[in-house]
Image (cartoon, rainbow, N blue to C red; front, side):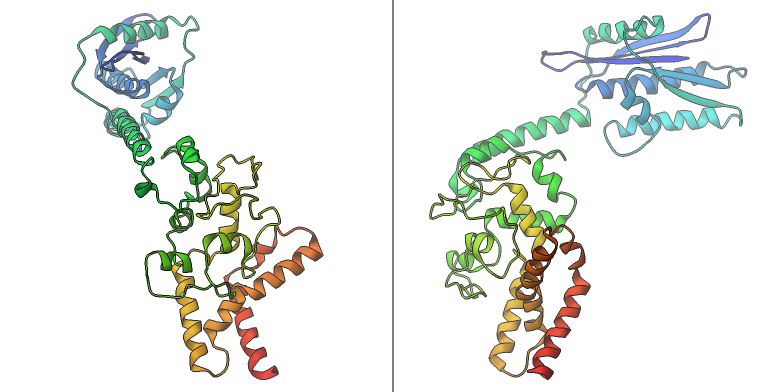
Length: 380
């Protein structure tokens, strides 16, 4: 049997960790040890203890030993030690897997069983390694920093620098959808639980489009005017200047939820508050939540895309040449006017629009495009 444990000092600098292992059978103590592990997490220390304990057990196992039972009170480490997958302490897992393979290849009867052992429940062997891991904190620490600790430190440093940079208007931009006080609250996170990552983090295309829309850096009239770029300033609906505010709230070409409406108080620079709270559909001043903005982008997949800008330009060129309706012109109509009309009909008939967007997919758009062309050529 193998018992292991890892420990980490709290509130000390530099960071200290310790690990301990015990190899025994039902009647006697075979071998044990403890060691310092440097700047690491408790998970890293537990993984190191498991790898060393397994190696000592296989080294001391005689021909009569065909089963090694390993006990650890860290469930995550117990599951990861022989997984050899991506993540923290991957190399330790790979080394432990090599040790396990060598033992298992001795005969078909050889096996290794890993058990989760509850801590501080009076199990003598577990209490032994728990104390050993704590004692190892006082040993000289090696000059080692684990991947997890290095990543935590780099992330903390990046967040600190970001909070300093976000105070600078030239960094965050004058047209950012979020106000400065809201940016200070939301911070920066690489963790999947962050609201923006939860919604758009699974798709690079979605995430890029969300970033462009929130920052205002996507092809539209106001952006072209601000940076003196070529292209139309007016909206395809006829609005003299196509702004992000107009696209989100007013443009009749796009579908939007009834709960999404223009805030009562909106400054000239469209400083709408970015509400990250999933439960806050609309704050007291009527500003949109991130959930609503993301829903709008999902309902209108052409908004804030270069594909839409290219399609509008192609449709405008076709119109200048004259003749019958072209595929580009029909596709513009299918994405906007036709889609909005069908959306309203569906909403009036069913009262809910949850299933509308499941049916209005790319193949549906293509069919509507050809119908539009046929209608304008042969029936008008």
